Amino acid sequence: MSKKIVLLPGDGIGVEVVREAEKIISFISEQYGVEITTETHLVGGASLDAHDIPVKDEVIEACKKADAVLLGAVGGPKWDDYPPEKRPEKALLRLRKELGLYNNLRPVMVFSSLKDASPLRPEVVDGVDLLVVRELTGGLYFGQPKGISEENGEEVGVDTMRYTVSEIERITIAAFEAAQKRRKKVTSVDKANILASSQLWRKTVNRIAKEYPDVELEHMLVDNCAMQLLRNPGQFDVILTENMFGDILSDEAAMLTGSIGMLPSASLGDGTGMYEPVHGSAPDIAGKDIANPLATLASVALMFRYSLNHEKAATAIESAISKVLNAGFNCKDMSRHARQVLSTSEMGDKILATMKASS
Ligand code: NAD
Image 1: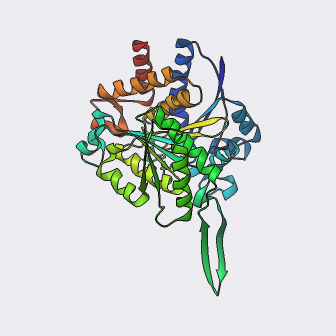
Image 2: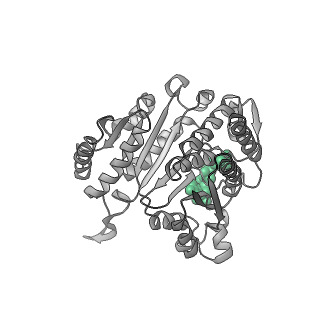
Image 3: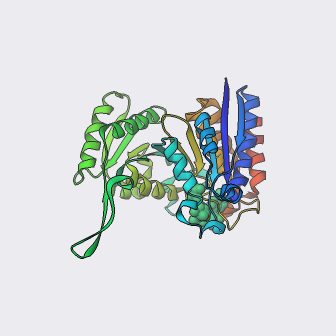
């Protein structure tokens, strides 16, 4: 069956890391007999330079028609002073909105060979393998009323944390389905001792959980979860949480690995899914062939797992990454923890060679 992937390299190192992803995608296409077509478009600063707009309507339409989207990164100093509607990151917000991406998945895995890279003690992070499932389109960031107004002669800022049952249901189902493919445990994180939206969250999660008797459910207050992530991160399998709690906890969890160049993410909705490394366009190292492409390659693995339904390809990429790291190779950002430092393109070639050798 033919699959279409839209590639949006974007700006800075986005271009370099997506180039490495293309090598892996084309190998998988040949090796597993999946007919894959790719189509590349401009977003962010690159689109502003060419078309004076962060993302063109026809690019959004191409993404909607595709099976998956792989994004590099957008932004850079060149566009920092542009007006708000012409900021490179507008492209991301519009893509998330138009594709209805309500489910953000951020896996965090500490490889044995890199446990010394964590700011926590190696014995605390060794073996950590967790997935943050963050609701992406509701909660405090979007609830109305919202804004700054004047009351009794002084300014007042208001945000509203609001969730409907259907919004909670669909992200809960996503978390339980993800847990079924993992170690079958969901930790639902809320602030149900104080917030009404969290009480509805907990009640809804409890109801949905009955449909997944094979998955263990526990509830945890968000302040306790922030603490437990540092005390004993190995206890977590899937962390399910609302938008703002997920924003904060996923960054905290990411730091367990001590590396931003290696963290992938997936954003899913009812249509096309979008995959991107967690890092930005890294203007300080762009064009030097030293960016770590592993976050993007791990994002490609997620793309095969969640949008292209090809678990074998996903596992093959993840296992190659693991083998290459355990053999002591890494990029410049992780040079203190590598026996041999590779350039961006050498790392892409190394992963490809390892996949070829195992196939
Ligand atoms: P950044 O993630 O681009 O860089 C932070 C630091 O990490 C830099 O020192 C950089 O060199 C390093 N780094 C990041 N990715 C790396 C990789 N793959 N390999 C090696 N080192 C890596 O964050 P920033 O500096 O805050 O932002 C730079 C630009 O990226 C800004 O314009 C920002 O708006 C944009 N940004 C975009 C996204 C996105 O597209 N999703 C996300 C975050 C930031």
